[in-house]
Amino acid sequence: MRFWDTSALVPLFIAERESGAAVKRLREDPEVVVWTLARLELLAALARRGREEPTAARQLALVRRHFLEAWERWSEVTAADIVRRHAERIVGTHSLRASDALHIGAALGNSSPSTAAKPPPPNAKASTSWAPTKPPRPPTPTLTPSRQARQPAEDAKRDEPARPRRGERVP
Image (tube, rainbow, N blue to C red):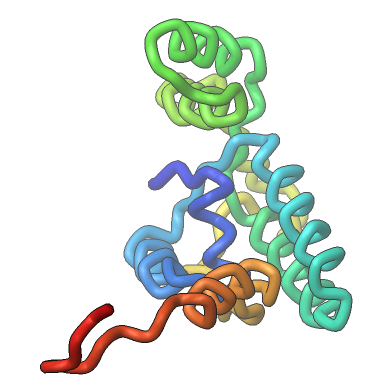
């Protein structure tokens, strides 16, 4: 069982440099634990990507659907009061943003049996199963990094002065 924060989840659904490693970790340990607000953070990231790349709307709709389907198979840490107390202690000793401290607080709070969503009773509907019967099919990341994210690097390369060739004098 691994705790996944939003930054670890995104590469499972959107093609990034870390996607291969993230999919490998999911295959190694398909029991995923997430903080309840990670869902909102990931949906916000997808919406932001949609505003940056309007032509990717169909792909993003598919990614969103896959994410929401996967979310139903994961254990969700929902005990906000316990998580908040952990996060308050963490920000007092570490230089973290509140959202990062909440994720760490959720990971710490997961060690308490009362903080993670419990499996449904055996007579619950099969469609609401807490754990998949087989490891979930890792999603194939479908989107490339946004043009906006690539553009500054491309501009920097273009604006670099040409390097002198071997043996050439530099004025």
